[in-house]
Structure formats: C-alpha cells, structure tokens
Length: 220
Ligand code: 5GP
Image (cartoon, rainbow, N blue to C red; front, top):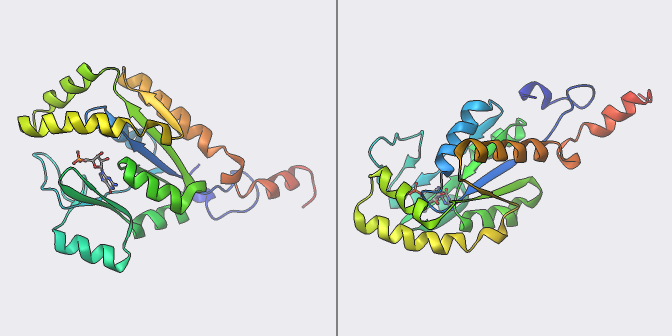
C-alpha cells in the first residue's frame, strides 16, 4: 500500500499510519546492508538521513549517507529544536532531522532509522506507539571483527575501539522489540521484512479499519 491510501478513510486499501522502524547494532553487524536492501526492495520505506559532525569515509556521499555538518551547525539545529533525537557516538555527534521524518510519516510512509541505542531511547520516549525497534546481532565476536576489518576503511586504533564499543552497544539488546542475528544476510533480511509486514498490520496502525469494517457490514 502506498501514498494513495494515506489520505483515505474508507474502502480498500485501508488507510494506515506510517511507522518508525529503527535498526540498531554494533558497527559491523550488517545493519547498513540490511537498510540498503530494505530501501531497494520496498518503495514505501524512506530512510532518515542523519546529520553528523563525523568526517565522511571514502565513498560516502553528503546527503545520501549523512548530512555532514560542523559542530556549530549541529549546535544550532539542537537549539532550534530541529532534531528529533541526538547523541554522541564515538567522538562525534549524530542526530535525526525532525522535518523530513515528520513529513514522511504524515504522508503514510514508513521511516527507517539507522541510529544507536541512545537515539532509540529518545524516540521511544517521544513516539512509543509509532516505533518498531530491531536490534541486529552478529553471529559471533570473531565474525564481527572480521567484518569490521574487511571494510578496511578505519585505522587499527579505531577498529579496536569499535570492538570495545560493540560490547557496550550489545548490552542494550533487551531494550528492543525484536532481535535479529545476522548469520546469513538473506535470512536476516527476510526477518526484517517479516517484522515490518507484521508491524504494518497492527490494528492501531490502520486508522481506516473501523470505517472499512462498517462498510463490509453494510452500515455506511
Ligand atoms: P557510523 O559513524 O559508523 O556511520 O555510525 C556510528 C553509530 O552512530 C552507528 O551505530 C549509527 O547507527 C549511529 N548513528 C547514526 N546516525 C545517528 C543518529 O542520527 N542518531 C543516533 N543516536 N545515532 C546515530
């Protein structure tokens, strides 16, 4: 179901509210690959592009992977209330711009957030009923290290610190609605799609249902 259904109150397809799908994991667990696959496969999903003060990695594109901004602009966005959530991760600031996410949800689209546990906590406090959160775990610590190294984009000391941080990040798994172990990317992708499909069918996400059922019952 796409945008066409968003403004409708009766009939098929049934109008539904967009949901906020959060994917979190330690770096290297495959969350970015899962996000890209989901965006390619499902046109109803929009990615929330974060702002960050971290410099771009090779191959990263401003506006696609992140909006790369300096600390001054980041502080100004916080002060104006332009960020839905924000957090310091490793040595940099990251935040979710409010306006694009709110506009996409209002249009009945689902918004995908690739954010850490701190940001997820903030979104949960602000929008519990709109949120579906998924934590992605690697199949083993050895596999996580292998994946971090094969990216070959970060220097050795950064990799070591990310391994340490991974242990800390993983301690937040129990705060999430769902946990997916990414041993096999296709299987993990199927799991994420199943979660999204079920979350979309939740009764409270389909505000057009009561009118639809009344119509089925011939009461309209
Ligand atoms: P990276 O520097 O590897 O792109 O991201 C580092 C971590 O920051 C990842 O766990 C990522 O999910 C998280 N992150 C990216 N954008 C945001 C954001 O807007 N808010 C929060 N809280 N975390 C973010």
